[in-house]
Length: 203
Image 1 (cartoon, rainbow, N blue to C red):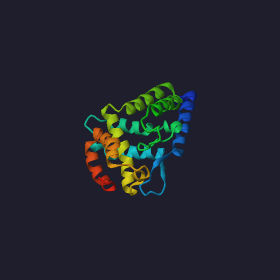
Image 2 (cartoon, helix red, strand yellow):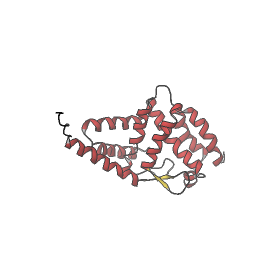
Image 3 (cartoon, rainbow, N blue to C red):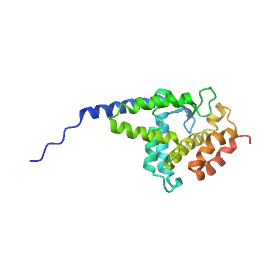
Image 4 (cartoon, helix red, strand yellow):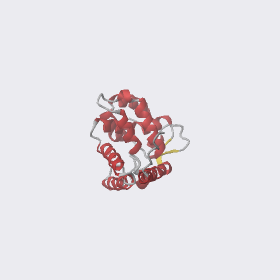
């Protein structure tokens, strides 16, 4: 007679499913970027899924030391903080622009709350991966951040200019805010992408 299956850890599952239910709220966070066909704005969950697919598809553009499984993990987790903070477009000029100290602090508080729903071991592992992405210093994080910049560029290319028109973005701004970041982690990608983007700007 076989032994009965082990009983699940009910408290652990409670915490895991609470986290997963909270993560569902990311589907309701709208980004400035539209879908490639410009039919509507994308939500942050769609953005994260698309980035994971970008990582799988463009893995051959990563450096030899980059672990794509870790990159995918970062990209799936990186925008969960937008459940609390919302999307702050990189080209916005509202005084609380992308990357400001105020936004970074708000996102850190959101990470503490959201990842804190999980069992401690997973909370710590997920938070460490999120922190690594935010710091943008390791090869994995640099490649992940490059993809995070590439995807909206390509959405704008496909949609006829998209948010570049909305925010009156100049070519110099695109180069400094986006191109330089892509180039750090994936120089080959930026060399290809900028040729497709340049035609939307007066250079």
